[in-house]
Amino acid sequence: MAENCIVIKFGGTSVGDAKAIERVAAIVRGRLPQRPVVVVSAMARVTDQLLQMARAAGNGDRKTALTLARELRERHYNTAGELLGTALFTQFHSDLGTEFEELEELLRGISAVGELTPRTTDHVASFGEVLSSKLVAAAFSAHAIESTLVDSRDCIVTDDTFTRAAPLYDETNSKLREQVQPLIAQGRVPVMGGFIGATRTGITTTIGRGGSDFSAAIVGAGLGAERIEIWTDVDGMMTTDPNLCPDARRIKVISFDEAAELAYFGAKVLHPATVLPAIQKNIPVYILNSRNPSCEGTRIAARAPHCKNFFKAIAAKRRITIIDIAAPRMLLAHGFLKAIFDAFDRHRIAIDVVSTSEVSVSLTVDSNESIPALAADLSRLADVKYEGRKAIVCLVGENLREVPGIAAHVFGQLTDVKIRMISQGASEINLTFVVDEEQVPGIVQRLHKTFFADPDPEIFA
Ligand code: ASP
Ligand code: MG
Image 1 (cartoon, protein in one colour):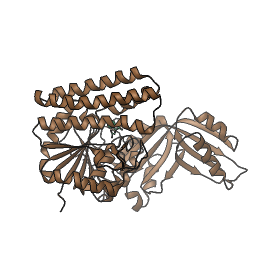
Image 2 (cartoon, rainbow, N blue to C red; image 1 turned 45 degrees about the vertical axis):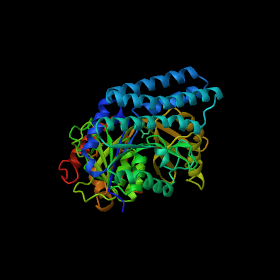
Image 3 (cartoon, rainbow, N blue to C red; image 1 turned 60 degrees about the horizontal axis):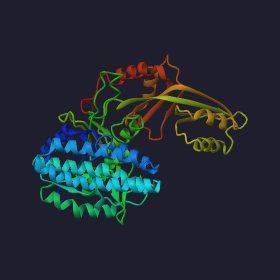
Image 4 (tube, helix red, strand yellow; image 1 turned 60 degrees about the vertical axis):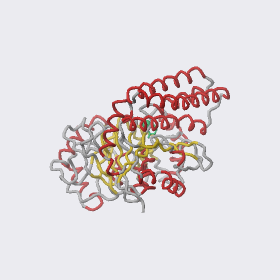
């Protein structure tokens, strides 16, 4: 019979310095009765710095690579010095020394060859989580938390798609049960690095940038955890941007689908796709703030409870360009849309909102400098116009699926606004429209006032 446990994941800022790591120790101590398994990201900015050294080495610039590695060493030693007593620090110092020698040797090798492969990129990037997990485990010992470091490369088995490897769940789950479960049973706190894994033959891989949330979900799903806590530096998901609306509320509970819609709008809190393994097993995921641990955060659930308000959140994304493509003669002939999408593909420009009529297509993209070249390319097919300084406004809520007439409420508030495009996605839980960028604050404030005047206390804080 598996022991109950919870998985607690701390992001880069939550382990960014000694003070932050002390907060982490306090949070974990408070949860010992629930048998936590701890997953940590690299210290803030470390993964970027590692990739920078890898690139420098790949360009044959050994000096820069090694200088950056030295800075990384200093930062970890300094943090350890603040956290650990003399005896622990001495032990830790030599342990970390071995890691840094390996990193430097690797960087020398890369610069000697002058070539950086995805496989060596992953090897370099993995040091961030290897170091942070060692540091956090040592800090736990210093705080009398009985913990054991678990090398994620011994548990998270992946394919060999380096830099974004996919987990092999069956093997991973049995390794987790073998290696992590007994520690939980002994009352110890397993500490693991997120983001990293290894192939069946033991070659280090990473599972994609920001992948520590994914690691937490893999571990939680594999161990059948009661819940997963993602600790970050915000109170959770909000009804809208508090900089736009000071009366924005925290969302106490949101469905996975709703959270996924919002993620696209740079709700940087977490990318819900990464916690899918947990949601599929009905394990609730909480977003919590390590700077404000008493706040209850946001719970992401497979299904959200009924909400009296039409919407859960209003989001806006600025710096959008609308591209209008009109081809009267073609009447959207067979193959026309494909030709258009192919052009976007060639220029590697991602499309967000699409709306079509018999004779024209409008699309939105993030404003960027490749648009003129794309437009020139497209103008061989049809008449093309593009216009920047637009914004997408999106209202999200499961009620859109059920309650008729919601769109009328929304647009009834905006009778004086020129709306350029409207779309209600196939998910049926978002209502999206495009407006001039400078109208965003006014529109969002008006809609928030209308739809959150009386927030459902079960759903909003
Ligand atoms: N350290 C990794 C990154 O920055 C993974 C993570 O933080 O989730 O991408
Ligand atoms: Mg990170």
